[in-house]
Length: 502
Image (tube, rainbow, N blue to C red; front, side, top):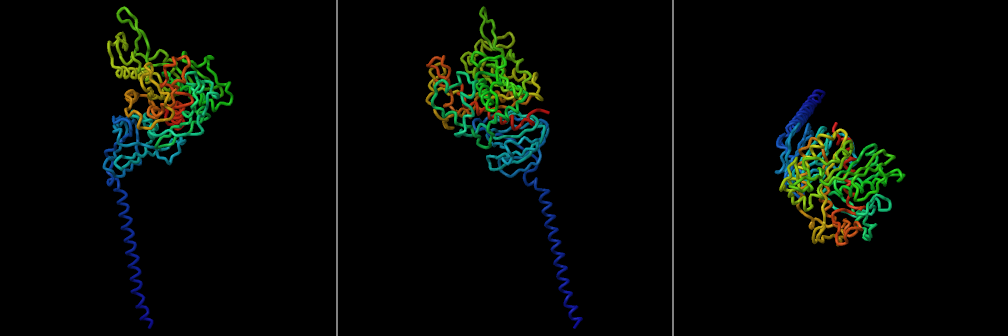
């Protein structure tokens, strides 16, 4: 009986041992196969070749060139799509993108206020349903970019959404100041002071479509420029933005008496040089008029001396720009005047006055002169440079001197009624920036401003102007330029560390 019991146990042991052995073998096969799949998966997604980095431009089909210097791309992942072709670029690679194929936006899991120098994750959503996700590490400079607000930055590149795509929304907390709290609004921009009763134009705030931008914080902005010089250089539209910045900053000042013009000057259209000191922050916010950024001169043609524009010589006031910590440039408005557009016996290079020169070519040469001056005279380790795009006018039924008007506009307009053409001047600006050695950020405000014919002074501008002439070029304050400065604040606030070249 004992023998029979012992014999019956052996088959059960044999079965258990066999089962355990088979189980371990199956687990080993699964682990080996999984490891093989993970190691070979890059080949399934196209491998490290044919990366195309592209930007999205809703208003132009022109391609843009981006130059990446000393770049490192890591953590690449690609997910199918017939229109997507991943590729790795290393140092000194050039990337040309079709501006209508895709758009970039920062990973929205990151805070708008994030100022860390960690790696940034960038996502590209392709029009064909595919996409790419990769990480871009330090020492990256990106130049160029059609209709792209993150055109050029230094050291670390964090690609943003297209700030020009979005909508105007009512914000009951707006305006952030008024003509009583800000004593710096000159007569031409003080629409309320000039009798405008409809103040709805003050309540609108620009909301980008694919990202969030922080509300302007005057105290934080003042801290950003503590001990620094913030300098605006350009035409009267840039003076418009400069006055807006002064008014916005007053919201963070405890004692208004400690904000004053260095020479005691009152802001008027007749003067073109101002430096306002914010005593508690040891900073200045300055404006220098320069209609063209190059030298307005006179030349002798025959026996007559006539006005000329030295497109090969920087503006004579350029010495005042040196040493600034933040420079905001613009030029565009005066290039639309009759004499400038005609280009007859007006543009001068050296001793030669061109009998006829196309205005776009003259604009390009002038910007090349400006760019050369910047590269030779501005230290990118100290100075952050912005170039603001052209601001649209909204004359209807004529030009400024032929009965053009905008007084009937009371609300922002939608995309149907705005121009679909991307201004040629903006293309020239971006082309110039792409060739510069110094990093420059292109502040693109054209499209978002094009929706706002309601926000011009119209008949509520300077009282001394002929009543038949309306101002549909400048902007009421508070108003649209406050939103330009919100974008400027965003770039300064979110990239104080990364945008300066080490």
